[in-house]
Image (cartoon, helix red, strand yellow):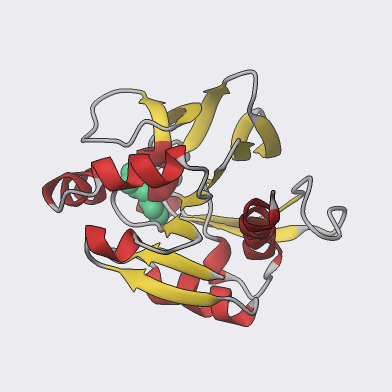
Length: 196
Ligand code: GLN
């Protein structure tokens, strides 16, 4: 299994390391041509207006939409969640608009408000064991369509969810040693590959 990690900006090497630790192959994707042949795509954290603009500038919109329509799983963390969303509240740059969620940026405050929290994520391995989640100027999902499976919340805010082949997390699972979130994503990739 080959997982592409969008390598325009942000926490790329950490995701690649997690993928390798889970036993799959990770490659950094710097050009739209790098999407060819990948089994899954991760869009990492960073800054969503910058990543959105670079995605547009480098011609990523049509090929990402194409692979997503063919069912390739796409995992967005933090900024990745924002650019995957169908709706973003307030002013924002270009977004892919694929996952049926509405998002608010910087929902937990500015940089100083970065924090860690033990959360419970339904659907991952040993789901009753807390996952240490790192939030950095994190977005929140304000609302989700009827098909969306909410996997984790903080108070009332949705912070992890799955919509068909899209997985989104408001936090940074690549910044903790816990592999369970990446393993869940790889399970989505494997299930698609093995489907008849
Ligand atoms: N606040 C950033 C944004 O709006 C996201 C931060 C992150 O990815 N850690 O893009």
